[in-house]
Each structure stands twice: as structure tokens, then as C-alpha cells.
Amino acid sequence: MIRVGVGYDVHRFEANRKLILGGVEIPFERGLAGHSDADALIHAIIDALLGAAALGDIGSHFPDTDDAYRGADSRELLARVVALLAERGMKPGNVDSVVVAQRPKLAPHIPEMREVLSSILGIPPDRVGIKATTGEGLGFAGREEGVAAHAVCTISVESP
Image (cartoon, rainbow, N blue to C red; front, side, top):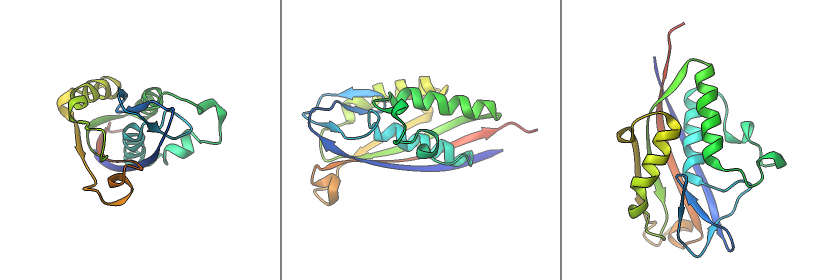
């Protein structure tokens, strides 16, 4: 059986933080605010995977009220979700995503993001789609207040 999930995440920019997207540090004058490393792309992918598996959302598994996740590396959180799926006979099939950010330009970093994510997800890079777009100057992303990420994924479920 194939199941589909959708995820969305948003984080505002903040000074004195690293900008991490797709598990890759992006050179920029600001990073994203959050309890963890605030990797909006990975967070959207986590929500898509959890949604496809009907296992809740990122906040139910890694609450921002738990100090254990303060400053957490989102790559590790994603790996934990992949393991959670595997325990239930499920595995990622593919991911498609869009990151909305006026700046910085993300296109040069997409190949590395795809490699990082594919290694964690256990799928080939050609099954990890990442697109970047600007807000065309509109909305919070267009005003350079933050970043949004959308993700859709499939997971396969072993027959009982």
C-alpha cells in the first residue's frame, strides 16, 4: 500500500542564528528562530511522513516544551521518524518540497540538501525533490521576515 502525507512549516528570521535548511548550513546574515535548529524544510518533511503514517505531527513527537529538543539537530529528528516508520513496516518512497524565501538564493544549495536528505530517508537523491521560490515581495517571506516550507511524501506499507 502507498500512503501520502503533506507537511508545512514556517520559522521567522532571527539574528545570531545559523540558517539551516534541508540539513545544510546556508551562508546568510540571519538564521531561523526556533526551539531546535529551526530547519523548516526538514520539519515540513517530518510532518508529511508522520501524516502519511497517521502518527500525529512533529509537535506531538518532539514538543518545543521539552528541553531535550532545545537546539536539536533536525537531521537527527528526521532519522528518528524514519526509524519510527520502519518499526511499523513503513518506509519513505519519495519527497517533493518547496521552500519559500525571498533571500538567500537557495538553488546553489539544493544538490547538497538532496544528498543529505536522501541519506537520512534511505532513498536515492532522484526521489527527493526540492524547489525554491521567492515570495515575489509579498507576504512574510517576500518581506524577508522568515521562511516557509511545504512537503509532500509517499510511504510504502508492508502487507501484514
